[in-house]
Length: 167
Image (cartoon, rainbow, N blue to C red):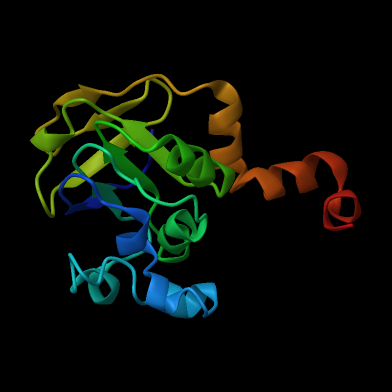
């Protein structure tokens, strides 16, 4: 279980990769790109997000292109998890490869904007401020290992050494 409570940023359904990593900013590095994350739907997000916050969204989070930057910007901004009823398949894998936890939670809409939630990584579940446990779909152990390592590259570096991964 996560030790500290996590503040919730609530988003709607169908958040696509162009909203997360806007095309007009893709020519820049991740630091600049992250400053444009969600600007078209939550202009207050980048200025208010803090390390350890979570996003709770509607269905189809991460639809659109396969750009991994759409997950990387959330990692860069300190988001520790995205909780939604469903995710794009490409986004799902990109997020885990980068160490971002995605929790598929059919009852995600029960979580409120600004609420403090805890995450039970073992079950997995979201624990709301009033103690209600919202069950999430199981996550394969190899994906949880990637999240704990901070992403696939970190996992490979730990396993095979920096030189083997960096070439």
